[in-house]
Image (tube, rainbow, N blue to C red):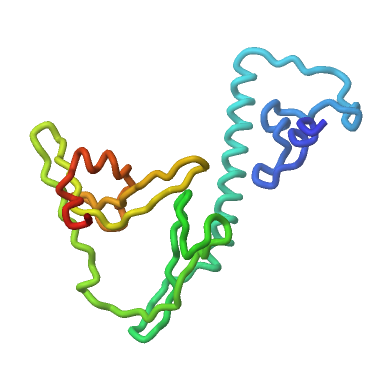
Length: 192
């Protein structure tokens, strides 16, 4: 019944029901018993009728799209900032990451307000990694940022947060301390 109701409900975007757009006629139900005989259409008439319905649906969808675009554009405006203005920064959500000691839906979407300061030195400088002939690059750990022990029911697992050579600070990864000690013992010389 839900499928029947959805397929026969009026869609504002195409200005007809989905069933009517697909088959070119209203669905026969107790409401539409007035259409007694089935129409038999064969040959090129079927294609012509289908093309007309598709064209009609496309025109109506385009009309609905422009209407929705005009609604959205009413609220949009070009932003201009002065040096003393205060602005909020949008924080992009990342799965499983705690921001501001809160995880999930309750973590803030905007932080601030901060003063807007125009400084050309705030531009990020990007140096691409040096690629080898086979289009690969060497990645090695630079230093250990932090240590952490994750406690499970029966054991404790030590992890280290590692800063890698071709990545920014915020792209540091958590690695098992034991594995890092075996592969890169020089990183632990200043920690021990």
